[in-house]
Image (cartoon, rainbow, N blue to C red; front, side, top):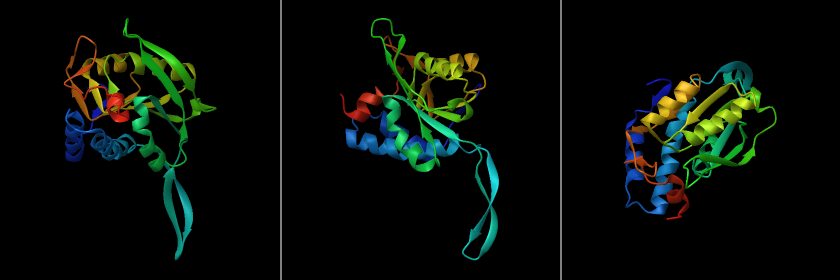
Length: 208
């Protein structure tokens, strides 16, 4: 489907099942989030470019492969923060930016309330973290912001998406790569994904 990769892995399916379960308590929800995120990261970074570097081992010299480009990870506040620690631990020397977007409860439209991007971010490979993508309004606003800053190489990492959102993103930003664990087919009257997992941010941060 367009430029979207659905991660088909038994462990991803298992932990996503735990995240969907409304009876899972906060600690277990966070633990499942912690376990599923590295699996997403692995898939979302498997095509990053590398370059050859000669190093000296304890027993001799050898050519190795290291990441070629600089990377910036941008969580969409606040739910994106749930995925950030894994990327900081695993992606070497990555930089961090933040984009804060909230939904107007009356219009359901996204509103930017915070932006803090690294210097010269246009030269980086940028990875956006947004666990739930329903209407695509917030992620498209974030992508517009990055495009206006001159960023060319962008990938979106998500947990769960509404299929209609994928279509909108790929039609407007056909060169953006999307990685997600599952795709749901409905939105309710409040534009929440059905069956979904509920509000990922509220459940992760215990605000329910």
